[in-house]
Image (cartoon, rainbow over all chains, first blue to last red; front, side, top):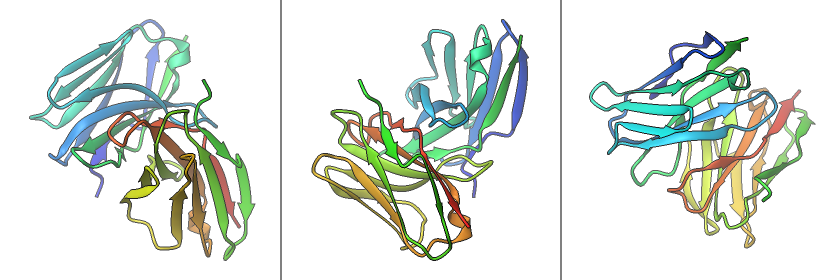
Length: 112
Length: 112
């Protein structure tokens, strides 16, 4: 049972444009969401997170939006840069539950 | 500051053997989690330890065990290795289980 879903395995975006990565979840007990970026041969790198009491969180070029009623979150990267090419994982955690539940990832390719 | 370190980086074992993977947390971090990532999937939660006690366990067989030492480093042990145990094993650490978890580079295990 995949509780966190990233339905787009890959995404290609022109350099300088906006990249939008999507994530859906089914478990209504999730209350904290994170995005990680992963390069080959490296561990996931934390990007940005959002609590369920918010609907938006920004950090530089990265913005995460949370729509609790739709059980959907998205990561916006503006402007996209070649160094953003990586696999992006969405993860979720329930209150009082330590484990992170990950999606299957979206491979983002930024085209120069 | 040094990040999360893991050893070894790569490992080749044969079916039935046993393996021990090691993780050193970021200085000041007392929470250590272990994840397994197989090709094409997101990381799957195996264990979390905090203050040397097990705080959570994922859906993995008893062949998987872990422990945390007084210096907060951790070991993951896998007995009676199966071909399906071939994966990237990731360690993540945080100040507490509720704080953002930061990942190490992983240990890539190949079981032949």
